[in-house]
Amino acid sequence: MKPANVTERQPRRGYHAVKRSMDLVIATLVLVASSWLIGLVYLAVRIKLGTPAFFRQTRPGMEGQPFDLVKFRTMTDARDSDGQLLPDAQRLTAFGRFLRTTSLDELPTLWNVWKGDMSLVGPRPLLMSYLDRYTPEQARRHAVRPGVTGLAQVTGRNAMSWSERFEKDVWYVDHGSLRLDLWILWRTLVVVVKRHGIAHDQHATMPEFRGSGLNDRDQRSST
Image: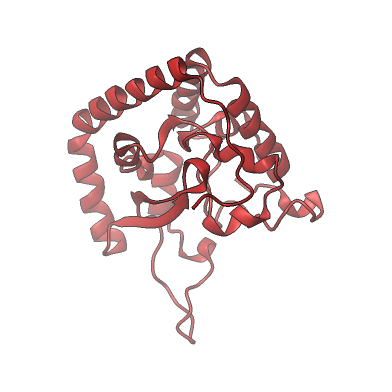
């Protein structure tokens, strides 16, 4: 059932049909071409971080519908004396940080694209717990499929607030086009090569979104 905050958007059928075809073609080609690399990263994660090698977490998709996001694991299972997991920043190893800065941890996410849970380009899928914290305007980010990369990820800087990120997400919902998608994909390649400017959605690199009523200073991204 769709969360109350998520509003529907009239689809542009031509654009979305071509966009889905592009997602399938590119995801298939990259998965096949990088299968050897995926195998190497899988073995490296198993050796350095243990099992499971994959990180799975339920995230909200289009219209807020849940799906299981799949990525390579980047953190250990280190716990404190009470058996509680340590903060993300303490569990993120140098190897895990390398996977993130090179975006190698995102390779399995192409499976989500192939299945139709995600698109190559769109607002990044965040946490299910955030759904009730969005304003009605911010919730419109769920009117399209979430993306492996998005406008906020390739245009944002380290000081970007949550509200600024959501503004870019909603702008993309209203102005998405194949030309814009191709530009975002190109910019993603550039920032991945430079290893700079990619915003991640884990707590080791950005604070929890607690709602727009909080002071914007507390919603700054630390990526």
